[in-house]
Amino acid sequence: MGEEVKAAKEKGEPLLLPNFSVHYLRHCDKIIYGLFEPIMRTRRGGMVDNILGLVGRTNPLFESDISRIEGELTEIISNSRFLVVGGAGTIGSAICRELFARNPKVLHVVDISENNMVELVRDIRSSVGYGTGEFATFAIDCGSDIFEDFINAQVKRIGGYDYIFNTSALKHVRSEKDPFTLMRMIDTNVFYTDKVMQMAEKMGAKKYFCVSTDKAANPVNMMGASKRIMEMFLNRRSANMPLAMARFANVAFSDGSLLYGFNRRIDKNQPLSAPCDVRRYFVTPKESGQLCLMSCLTGENRDIYFPKLSQELNLVTFSSIAEKYLANLGYEPVQCATEQEARDRVLELKAKRQWPVYFFTSDTTGEKDFEEFYTDNEVLDMNRFESLGIIKNELDYDEKKLEYFVSRIKELRSAGVWERGELIDLFNEMIPNFNHKETGKFLDGRM
Ligand SMILES: NC(=O)c1ccc[n+]([C@@H]2O[C@H](COP(=O)([O-])OP(=O)(O)OC[C@H]3O[C@@H](n4cnc5c(N)ncnc54)[C@H](O)[C@@H]3O)[C@@H](O)[C@H]2O)c1
Image 1 (tube, rainbow, N blue to C red):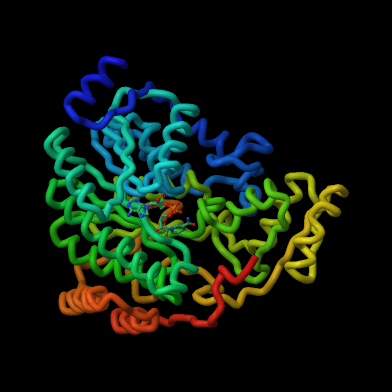
Image 2: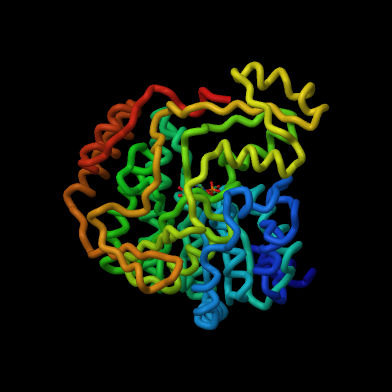
């Protein structure tokens, strides 16, 4: 190992982490995500009971389809080179774990979050160990010049990648509240995603994958709309480079999500707060990784995979998850009338094995009160898999519209000043049925 470090340093090459023998990580995942154990820690800490149980389910969604084609998946993965951009995030790291379990030839991970990447490596080393392929992480912004240099270097060194997953994004609806974060959302979700696909095409990769969102089907907020616009740009690129996508529900306990915050609230002796009227479908982190894997490795060009609605997959309210979550930790939820009351009563209630909760009805901008994975106009294949549906897409884009979007954003950026309203207007021009729900209230104004 010392020699490898020295050699890499002398050549000025990135230090590649040593690899490991892979024993089926799926077993570890079952433990990590609490299918077997009553109470376990999530990947980034915090006590979480059985996630499936918390979201009102008993069985994992995709097992039967995955096991039917397991041989095919393992064969492809063990002979391929993978890059996962945004790979330190919830979905990206779930993809990395799925790939890793099948011993890829190369697995490189790029993300701007240095800390989460360290956690990914520790997680993999602590759960699986080592394998025979090359595994390395790189703390790089995928929109930067350095990323371009990185890609060029990897093309020279290992011949590039066979498959590129891009799960980097700004995903919070609340990020649309100011014009600057909104502009970064456009950069990351639209322009960088398009640029990375262009690089994939140039290096001759076999497939490019990126995550859409249920919010891209009839979007009501700028995040969902940015994903819809991203799909338009990627559709254009799919003329020359095969593309796969997935749309899915909430990933339970994903980074930054309300449920993820529950762990923090408990650790910090703070109340739980949740809407009681917003209902969502939930998949586990592992299922999110499996869905992306299936889409990228088995999908045809432009397919969008989504989980089929079934008896297993039900709409669940956040408040009901909060109640179950507390019950699993041995606390009885006590509904408070105001945020202040909930803040004030933590220690008093905790002493009696109770926990204050503040449940409210949602009135914030961009909230959809239901979820849909596809629209009436989309062509579906519901027969290929038991648990997955596929939206089939033709090559269909409006070159003028895309060019107009690029030039309008350039114009705003070169003026050095832009308003949120100007960006909303532009999105309305791009998506004629864009039904932006503006209530003037954002989640940052809540506990
Ligand atoms: N989590 C969910 O519930 C959910 C549901 C449906 C769709 N999605 C979509 O899936 C995608 C990923 O979601 P997630 O939960 O994994 O998000 P996440 O925030 O956990 O991960 C995104 C990762 O991208 C990285 N990133 C951002 N900008 C980058 C850049 N310029 N260069 C390199 N890395 C960058 C971040 O550091 C982060 O690690 C998003 O597009 C989201 O909209 C998520």
